[in-house]
Image (cartoon, rainbow, N blue to C red; front, side, top):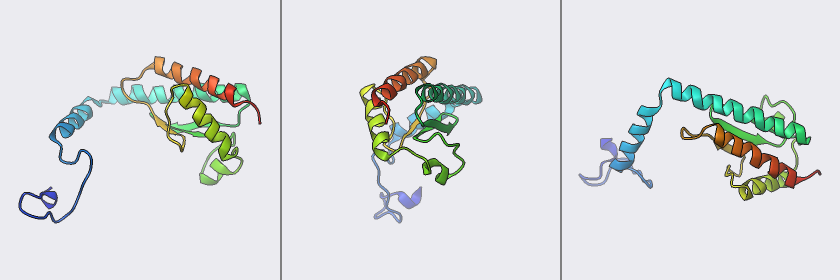
Amino acid sequence: MDLLDPSQGSPRVISGGTASANPLTMAAGLAAMEQMTPSVYTRINRLGDLLRKRTNEVFAAAGEPAQLTGEGSLFRLLMTAEPVVDYRTSIRKASPQERFNRLHQNLLEEGIIISKEGLGCLSTPMGEGEVDQFVKAMERAVAKLGKG
C-alpha cells in the first residue's frame, strides 16, 4: 500500500475512487466478509437456485422465450429459450433487443432493479420473501410485455 501513499509526496501509483482509503468503508467491508460463513454461502446459493427455477417456470408458463441463468447468488436474464452453453447460443435465437428493453422497463415499474444487461444478484439480507416478490413481479412484467 506504500505505493499509493501520498503522505510523503506524490504516490508512485495513482489511485482514486469514491471510498478509496476510507477507514469506515474498510471496516464495514471486513465486518461483512467476516459474516460470510459457509452456511451463509449455502443459503444464498440455494436462494439463487430457487429464484432461477421459479422465474424460468414463469417464462415457460407464459410461452416467453427467455431464461434466468447464473450460478450461486448471481443471475442473468437472457431472452432466448435455447440452452445456453456459450456466448453464441445466448444470442443466436434471442428476441430483439427492444423486447428485452421493454421487459427491463416493466421490471423497473414493478420495483425490480437489474442491470441493463440483465444482470442481478441476491444479497444476504434476502430470503424467500424477496424471491417471491421477484417472481410475482416477473409474472406481471411478462404479462405486460404481451406476445410478439
